[in-house]
Structures are given as structure tokens and as C-alpha cells.
Length: 219
Image 1: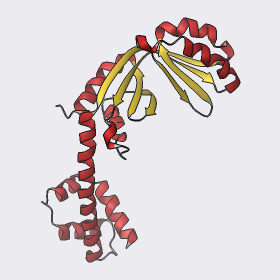
Image 2: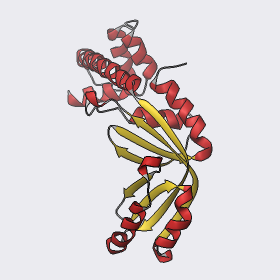
Image 3: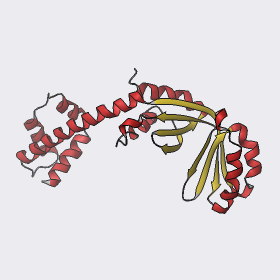
Image 4: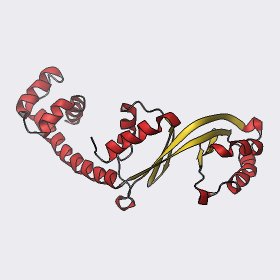
């Protein structure tokens, strides 16, 4: 039974047009079951397949409620942008970073709206900051510790409403929308309720417009 349930779920997930018809109640479950038996699982009973389809329909109702909550979160979100950023990729040497970071932090003036993002991976640490800081930071950071430098970057900051807490499925639709709009994401910084997306500066406008339409349901 478990295999049939999974096969039914896989089939329907791969056929969104059929799922849409199920949601609109314009498709006969028995006819759909026979179609699936004929094309996917010739040894299954119609009763077992119909039961699996009905379970899938119940899951759709739950997903629809969840989708409605996520849409409410999107509508309450705020988007801000910043351009003219640089990203340095450094070797992950904590002894070196311990000497570098205090000088970098002292040179960032938050009251003036200056940006500093720090992203740590297993092999490297990335610093994202205003382009005006590049000459000074190049003097602070040892040349042999700098792996890469990217210029002409921009940031989009999505601030989700905090009253909803953690919500599974909140972030992935955002990146799917950006992919559909052919936006290349350079870096992602998750600091919920904020989601920070780093893109090429030339893509800021396209990315911002796409997110405005998607998050606020504007056509």
C-alpha cells in the first residue's frame, strides 16, 4: 500500500494539470485511477489507487491553507536594496581573521548606512561591504589571504514579518521566482526574519521588480 501511495503521489506531482483538475473537482477519481493503473501500475487494485488519490486530495487542502499563510507573510514583507558593493573571499584562518576583523569593524559606520556582511563556510569567509571601503580593506587584509574579489554587486533584503515565526516552504518559492526571471544569485545570507540576496548590480532592478510582483501578488 505504501508503494502505491508513493507512486500515486509521484505521478500527480509530475502532472500538475491533473492536480489542478482535482482541485477544481472536474476530474473523476475512478477514471483517473484506471488511467494510472493502465499507465503506471498494472498490478494495483482500483480501490487502492482511489484511496491514495483521496489521501493526496486531503494533502492538497492542507497545502492550500499553508500556501495562504505564506502569501500573508509575503504581503507583510518589506524589500530594500543597496548597490555598489564588493565581496572579498578570504581563507578561513581564524588567527588572521582575529587580527583583521577588529580593524574592519572599526571602519564601518552603521549610522551612515554602511554595510558589512560576513559569511563563513568550511573553507573560506566572505566579507560584503561598500565599494568605498575597498582601498582601505586591501591594506588591512594580507594579500596571500585574499582568494577572490567581486565588484559591482547589489543586495536585496527581504524582511519577513516576525509574528509568523518559522514557516517551512517560505524561502524556496522566492528563489524559484528569481530563477524563472533569469536572475543569477551570487550569495545568500539567511538571518531570519531577514533574507539577504546578493546579485550583480545590473540585476538589481530586474530582481526587485520580480520580487515586488511575486511577494505582493502584483501583475
